[in-house]
Length: 221
View (cartoon, rainbow, N blue to C red):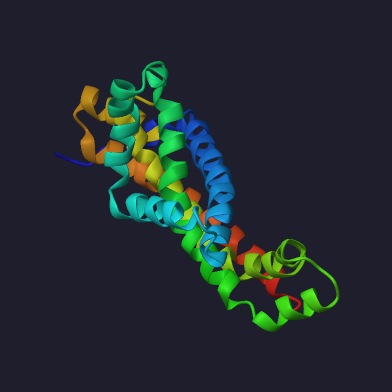
């Protein structure tokens, strides 16, 4: 069979209609994951009694199991033991799954960034009357944010690509749209090359934005 370029080009407008859903899942997942990751990183850094073991277990589980398995557990398994989740839709399950999965990875990156900040800065902050909380908030975390930015942006880009698994939960996003078009036309190569090019273009854009952000954060250094 000959590659059908016209069919591929005609797919782009169809797929772009679902790009908003893909980006919404990625952005929501990243924001929530970042909030959880900061909390986990602080707990792990200061080894808070009673919470450190739970944080370590959380990170170990979500880093040690595949994202697809976690999505299935949330969407299909959790409602069996917790009836409150029976009404959860695919979009919400996907966002929760992305949040929990990537927060485990991001927490370790943030923890490493916090540790990399020289301890003398904490000591200096304490010597002028700051509490440890104030030193962390005003001195340590801003510097750690600059160090962690490249890895966090890489996780965000990875999260965009990982939204493609949401089609297994019935979410109408660009991967599910490509799958539907391929099934109806039997032009699988054309359909999936189109969706691959869209993902590639989005990643290129965010990689460029990441470069600009890193330059801005490193300008003073």
